[in-house]
Image (cartoon, rainbow, N blue to C red):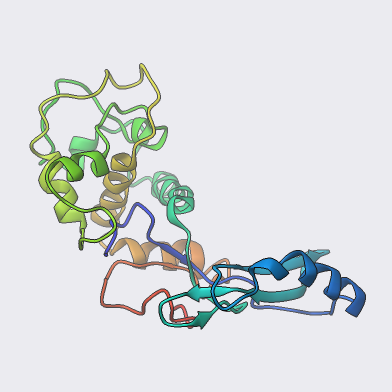
Length: 231
């Protein structure tokens, strides 16, 4: 399944640097904690132990893909789901710092095809889950899409959003977690910057931070999650 750019699309490969080693005794203690998951039939995790800003131990436990018998390693790329939302918000803030948009701009300025709800829905509302927009996954489910099985793109999300007649509440009056807002923010970043969302975040966030194995996956034909090479 291909997930919209603003949601669940960030891929992260952790723990790629190491300057010194954890003592053998401590290694044994750490490995013992994760032993119950370090099996060929169990999902697991990638672990990093940091000291003074440096990785002193890294190890993979369990499996990244049970169907294909792919073990987790310190270089495994993980799909980190809604942890990606903070990077979407950061992208909007970077564009605001560059004077290319304002957090109080109406989303219709950048996505005019959205219905007119007779309310101002700002980028700030979208970032803070106070827009009142109905959640895309609920709408897609009602339209017959299968969340974890179908190929779903931003265009598919927009295909249900453009037919909405009402909001859940007046913008700014309530808080309701909304994936929709972050898909719209990612589309805004792409339209304002003239780059794909993946290109913008790589150039402006991940590359400057040295996060060379982290990216937004915007093409279902790209390397799968079981490919530990990342970018």
